[in-house]
Image 1: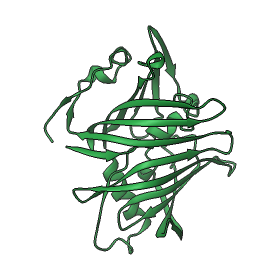
Image 2: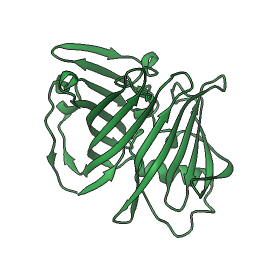
Image 3: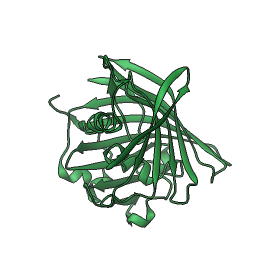
Image 4: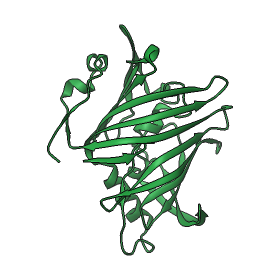
Length: 262
């Protein structure tokens, strides 16, 4: 099945669907539904990333991911431009553990990504590694701290904080959630000192088969004189992966995954 989709922000690739009465949900209920939508099994995404910095850059990427309650494995790979094709990032995270990963630069350079390096930018964009692997909707501490209109939509502001067993470079994440469609229209991420580190705005939402998907995102950071626009392309669910796809050696392969059973 094919749908329009952004990354993700991290992410992460948040899918959602309409529900009849979401306005009365508690913070824990809202976070639990968003968390469940994150854990959508195997998928493959194509997207375009425009980095607006001193030197503007356009990238086309593919994302291989498997997300379940037992852990998350994600691979980002540059398909274009030709001179950067094959650059790849593998990130892996299990509940309660810090994320780790591997960076591959053709032809043979492999570098480990340790937890302390999760703040580093993804392919020079305004996203960092933590933005695409963290699932803050699964964090223990969730609270609704207000409401605000975003793009003519009244949103509940969900505040997420990592619990004692969760490791993240962010101390607080606030999400402006359209509770009718279960789509985050804005996300702000803060350091332990209360400094705004990153803002992610959903600029277009699409609907397919009753699901609502963030199709375009703009990412900014006060620490950088740049912004990144993400234009979603195609999502395929139920694709077939092997364990090798999520290994350092598997990063050296740019093959598109085979379709699997939905």
